[in-house]
Amino acid sequence: MIYDLHSHTNCSDGTLSPAELMALAARAGVDVLAVTDHDSTAAWQQLELCKAQSIQVIPAVEFSSQWRKIGVHILGLNVAINSEALKTGVAFQQQARRQRAERIAEKLHQAGLADTLAGAAAIAGNDNLGRPHFAQHLVNIGAVGNFRQAFKKYLGAGKPGDVKQCWAEIPQIVSWIRDSGGTAVLAHPIKYDLTRTKLIALIDDFIAAGGQGMEVVSGKQMPNTTRDLAVICQQKQLLASCGSDFHQPGQPWAELGCFPPLPEQCQPVWQHW
Ligand code: MN
Ligand code: MN
Ligand code: MN
Image (cartoon, rainbow, N blue to C red):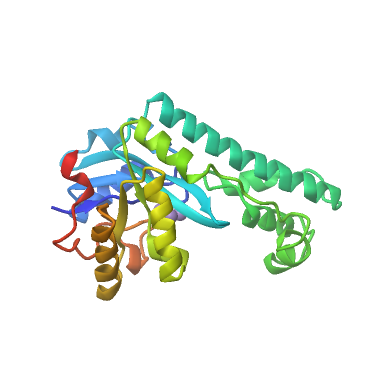
């Protein structure tokens, strides 16, 4: 059985529609698929997901948060999409994103660039509206010569458009997930580039907040990484998850359904579903 419990559609920053993702999952031999768009459950509304023949689809989401000023991601797996708790969470995060974008536009206005919000939003589409979209918009309107200049003059660290993103804190996110019947899983622990000590501190804080699992396998990764994470997972008595973090075809490190299996000592996150 292939469980791919981390994937994205064009309802966030993936390139495939939910239906296209399902078709690819079928070709890739995936048996159980979680669609985990960033702070969005919109893919679920597209019925193709539910109608899929052989594939079991797990309702899920990937929430953005921060820990000691580092952006971290938390998967809500097997959630009740229509529960009040989850709807509250998704709405909160979307508002946080929107507010930050408005603040960036305001700051750019003060710096002499009026009305950048709509243009940036159009570029972002379903993607998380952020500084790169503003940068592209500034290039498009000729305010700067190129993307790099947009950051150098307006959007980079310490520049007017450098506005902090305030996602919900980890305990809040874990509550939304658990209150909606889901399992809270720390996504791709090694992508945060933390020292071992800090990674353990993050995991301990996550557990203290009620977190239940961690991704032991995220896409194609080195065998020693899998071993290390499996040891931590077992020591911390967390459930283990695995997934590709698929966003688009042609990324060999994150192809749908293609990743090493969970080590045998791991307790799979799906065992109590
Ligand atoms: Mn993404
Ligand atoms: Mn992520
Ligand atoms: Mn992801």
